[in-house]
Length: 220
Image (cartoon, rainbow, N blue to C red; front, side, top):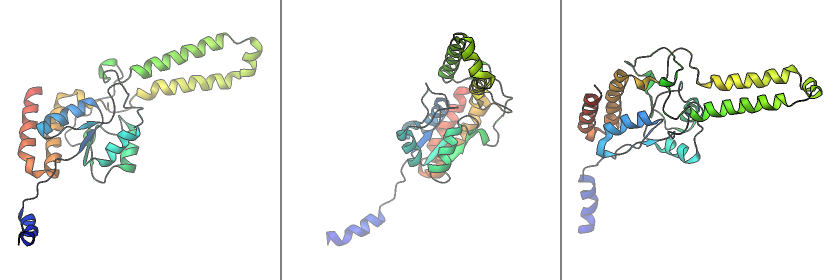
């Protein structure tokens, strides 16, 4: 008797949706999503704070998290081109939300001063590029005349071209992808994040909306 009732009881039990597995690209986005999710869950950050999103290549564990995610919140291809390629190739369909492309996002003119760089993200690139360039200069000064002639101007120009390309990796044409520095954008994104989470997890929609409202009030 008990055995025959079990299937009926299981069918009658309400189905509780799981909180979505969420990943983000960088710390500022992770902070926004975490404030909306609150105690319901913790979004995973794919790009470490010590790495540059412009050049960071995902580790296998990070790629795995991206592949398993129900939602992906990220700035966009303008900030992290390698992540864009990974999203296209391994992320689940219709899971990635580019905050930079959301309606209502304010796009600012590109700037390259340090104030518009995420903390610590460009340090490795800048120091590495300058150190390599200095080393190249010392090596070049140490060449004898014959070696210099054999070396030729083409290779030397190529070295400088490579350095110029590396130094330009963080030069943004058009709109500045560091859009999270705008309080207005953060407020817009909080609303969008709550909406996306609510679509995936309608049972907790009120919690997401309330958390987003509280977060907007804190940054206003």
